[in-house]
Image (cartoon, rainbow, N blue to C red; front, side, top):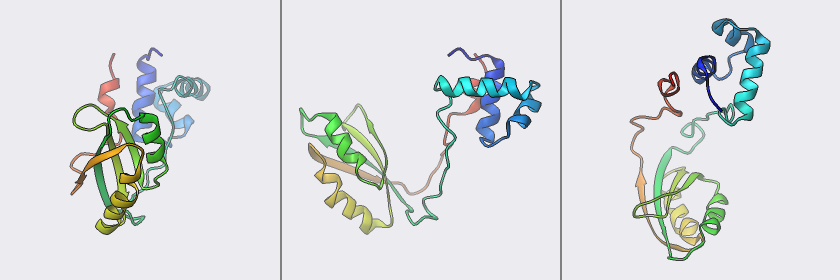
Length: 156
């Protein structure tokens, strides 16, 4: 989908406040509510806007430990089988197929270090094709924007 300046304005405003009412969005942009509704609908249907998600604070929900796990699988392992196993572990937020020293990069949350150790020894190392892993525990979030900077899509 080709974005014009109005689409970009909509994205910037929704980036800052995803729950902004359509009427307020329309007023700020200078279009009718119906026109803004149609544009937002097209942005959703085209996949530019993938959703309006709820962002929870894992620390407040009892999962303050964040770790990234580099996972190497045995050569010839089918990636889809490993990803299926990983998707069944509730503490995993995301898993990516990557290049480099590992086959997968896994983002995991845990209640504490003992829980992280349990995840590693009882769940992660049981996934299909597991060979070895390297775990990096996050000490603090230096930069976490949650999305692309709106400056990247403000101009063509």
